[in-house]
Image 1 (spheres, rainbow, N blue to C red):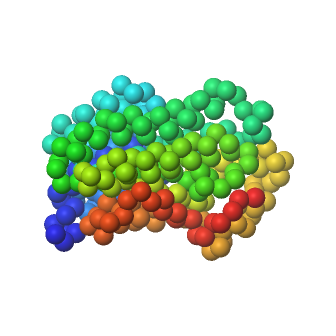
Image 2 (cartoon, rainbow, N blue to C red):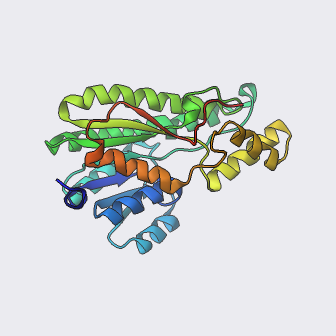
Image 3 (cartoon, one colour):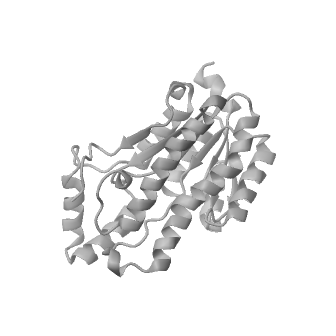
Length: 261
């Protein structure tokens, strides 16, 4: 099957798909001809995405709420007649502070969205992926923060390490069903989120934003940020026939980030 034939037969869901990386992924899937449902917590960005991509279906959903997550998956599956691709993209940055200063509720909220949210979506979607009888693909959005020491961001880094472990275990569980599960580990990604993160970390370190940016990129071999569209390209590669033999992997897309400060 060529990719020209492949994509129109695909039914995909993308969490946090109304902006940033999620929107880039949804746009790539939609542009290739796949049926796509996205969810997000905000109505206005969802409406803007639907207006920009005719045929895209949207739903308000907080993935940290198991009932909301299950409702999104079931609604999308019923509308599309099944699910072939799951992009577990939703996540939050969490607090940037020394561990002893982190509020307990902020720690819990980071895990509720970044880890439990991915679990709720996967749990609801797996029966639909199995029901196709032809395999499928789950992409879990992790981070290089889950692989290296990441000072002042312990809730986020710990949650992303959990995502990596979950993806690896799930790949073995679902392998007999020809369902591939991979984690993507972005590095420093251009966009509003990284600007907020750098602002918070600069304040915690008592340095300027520019100094924080220079510190972050010092560890990157290419000395540049990753563009959201480049992450979408990797998702497309993994979910297409090109990714057929790839599962249980953590695919770093970081410009060569080998350590953190």
